[in-house]
Image (cartoon, rainbow, N blue to C red):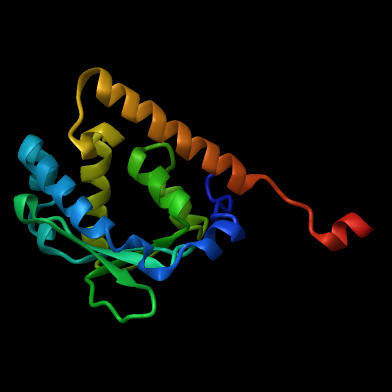
Length: 182
């Protein structure tokens, strides 16, 4: 897979996700982020003054976005409808699979930005602080879930394997009816 390659969710997946589907994620992600802050406070210290910033993470292929304030053990994640104007200090937009790839460290956020696969607006210094904190942390899904040992390894393998399958499905070209007729 090339950095910058379009990796939107397939159309059928986008159609079946109603806008309210993400609402339960807000409280779950808030608890996960706060738990991570208790276990690994250095990640949040690395953000400095930018831990109070409002980061709008806007997966362009989902009907909802996330407003994140990574303020250590007071962190908050709100799920917001894409149609709503959400005040933020910085907005990061792109397909969900690319954004997750940046978070897990398999994709280069700088390369995706320069190839215009993701966009960033607002306080650039806040984005740089977030990128540096994420890269230094080398987070795995089990870190966010608070899982260790065999259960953590199982969660990592399942989640990362699922993301890999989703990326392959998203990048597999399905011929259109017109291409088949030609």
